[in-house]
Image (cartoon, rainbow, N blue to C red):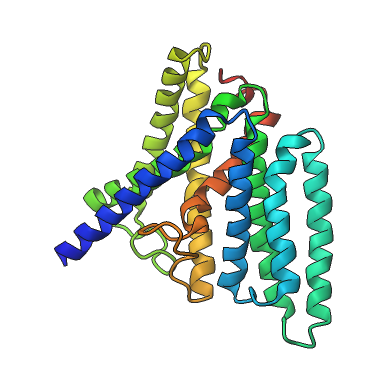
Length: 283
C-alpha cells in the first residue's frame, strides 16, 4: 500500500515538473501570442473532455462546434479584448440554440437534459479559458494573470496537506470523500498568504508597490471559488460515473482535472479586478 502511494505521488510530482517546464515559456512570454495559442489548444481539449464525460462525444454535431468554439475563444480574447464579452455572449447564445436544435432533431437520441448539462459544462470551460486570457490584457495584467493559478493550485495543495495533518470533519463526503473542513480552511489561509508573497516578489521584479491588503483579501473569494469549482467538477464526474476527465497528465487526470479550479478563479478574478477600483489597484 505504501509502495503504491509512493509511486502515485512520484508520478504526480514528475508530471507537475513537466507541466511547469511546458507552461514556463508561455508564462514568460504571456504578452505574445504564445500564451493564448497554447491555451486555445488546452481549451479545445477541455471541451472535448467535457462532452466525453457526459457521453455525447460521438455526436459530431455537438463535439465539433464545441471544440472549435473552445479553441477559438482564447485567441479571440487576445485579438479583440474590447469586444470579447460581446463575442462570448453572442457565441454562447448561438451555441445554446444550436445544441437545443440538435436535441430537437435527434429523435430522442440526445435528451434535452443531457443537452442542457452539456451547455452548462461547456459554458464554464469556454468562458473560464476566455477570461483567463482576457485577465492578462487589463491594467497590471502582467501580474494579475498569475493569480488564478496561484490561488487554485496553492489552495488545492495546502488543503490536501492540511487535511492530511488535521482533517477531522468531512466537507461534502458524497461529492469528495477525502476533502475536509480543516483542509479547506488551510487551503484558504495559505492562498491568502501566497497572494501577499506574490505581491512582494512582483514588487522586487519591478511591479511597483503592491496593495498588500487588497491582495490578502482577494485570496479569500478566490480560494473559496477554487474549492467550489473543484467540487462542482467532481460532482459532474460522479453524476456520469467518470473517475477522471482524461489521461493527459499522469497522476493528475485530464485538462479539466488540472484546470477545474483555475477556470473558476479566472472568472472571479477578472470580475473583481476589472470592475472594482479596490481590487483593480493592487500594483
